[in-house]
Image (cartoon, rainbow, N blue to C red; front, side, top):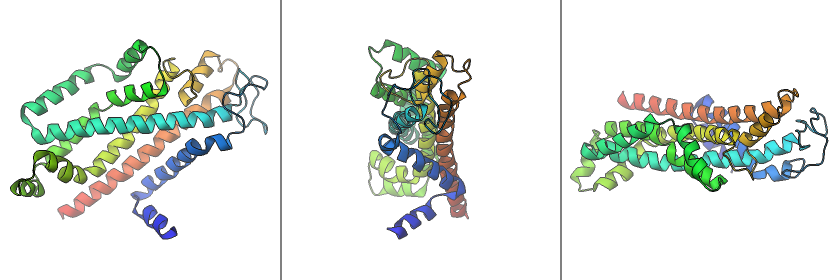
Length: 284
């Protein structure tokens, strides 16, 4: 087991990638085991308001008398799963559109790219706000679907460009010569060769999903029944935490969002650096 873990760690790309992996593992552990390590139950109200950090409350309490650290831990789970699941939805749509457009070309590529251009004209966050405002209820799953279905545009363009480059490769011509169908070439031949680019895009769209969820929650369009880093910031803003100098209610969720996204960005940069190095060595 130790050998497997050591080999996996050694295979992970670069110092940046390893640093990002450590950050991601930390947040994953908090998301999975947060209910066991949180000092107090979720949404528990039973303390004085506006208590500064102390040994009893490491991040103080909010205006409702809730322990901020406990809320932060429970909020990690929501923000984590929104980012991961929305990122996966984005990746599936972006990769499918990008590969089909880049490989098929012609009117299929033109039609798909015009759809992308049309949606790119509209600010994504504004479109999310419009859709969220029309829904009868905004639960966590609704948030995931809205973010995932509207965040694939740049990824689709990136995968299209990479597919157009791979389309000229010798292995694609060899696959055509042996009679492989187009969908087989796209998803059995080209897809594995652009996996590093897909992974790099996946970590980027995951960070965008976390930021989008925080933005929607901050604007009051998130799931009001759940706790996330965005809802914590929204409540802090609504209750004038700045006027009460309650920095412990504002900084922790902001820093959590920043570090979580930073970890994914480090992983993405590590993957891209290794991919470019391998391509350079192959060219030699």
